[in-house]
Length: 327
Ligand SMILES: Nc1nc2c(ncn2[C@@H]2O[C@H](COP(=O)(O)OP(=O)(O)OP(=O)(O)O)[C@@H](O)[C@H]2O)c(=O)[nH]1
Ligand SMILES: [Mg+2]
Image 1 (cartoon, rainbow, N blue to C red):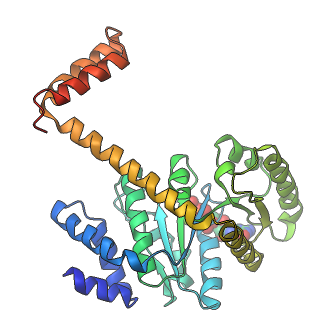
Image 2 (image 1 turned 90 degrees about the vertical axis):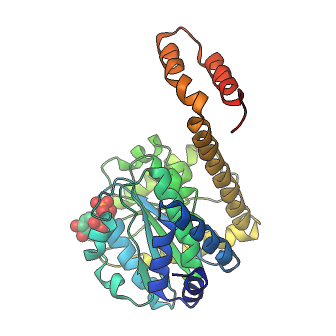
Image 3 (image 1 turned 60 degrees about the vertical axis):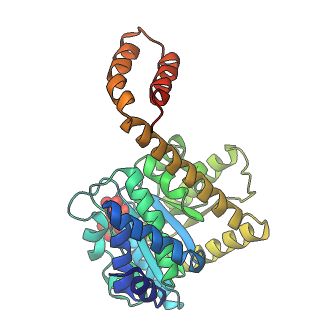
């Protein structure tokens, strides 16, 4: 399909065109990739207007249930919501979020909601790029809130935190989970922490967890953005605490905007991302150089066996790269 048509459909908010556009940016085909870049550049002026929210937490904490409940709340107050996922573990099946459509049954039927699974069989870097670009496409299609979900297993949270405005961590009441969060350094990147399943009999445990987390937050070093991380109780299943969460999100947004940090953070995220892509691309070019290809295995062996120190190996490899300099 031609890019102009795709763009037109996208800007009209047509979900079929949005899905097609995402498929296009997910391509690994080089000539299609050129089209993807043209499309992305042409829609840039129409992007940036959504609130980008990251949602993370261990398997079973209730992410899907929460997104269903929160998503429905958003559409009920007239917002259009898009749900994307960063799930590098997802296999050919098309990602867990798709299987999850059963957990997001209501939301997936909602005309004002768009749910897209994580691209399958990809590295974290690949998924992160596609999700980042998908956020822009969703914004061009008029979505007010873009939710990026990731399961809480290490690196993927950092990737998601670096593409959203507000990073939300879901926790379980009790079970010492709050301290695990700190160990992995996730608490440092969380802007709002929700203790889910905090209904009925779980309430006392949830309140205790809230206290523990708040105490733990006090010992972290103060944040540069001066935001005081909020810990709230919610029940995704019973639809409790959702509106309070939304208010807190808006408050966070206001805090960041009043301090001139909201768009500043996005700009930094874009530049960091450019550097990351640049690093990857330079490495790709380096590794595809004929001299380097020939010599790299030897240097790896020499470094492994201790014959050569890594710093001098690096220097010599770079010299190999520039040797006949027809790169
Ligand atoms: N009691 C209670 N159960 C909940 C709540 N939210 C989710 N659950 C249940 O917890 C289980 C896991 O919920 P999911 O929404 O699938 O959790 P998830 O974080 O998406 O899990 P993964 O997709 O495996 O990472 C399900 O049985 C839900 O019904 C809640 O607020 N209260
Ligand atoms: Mg889930």
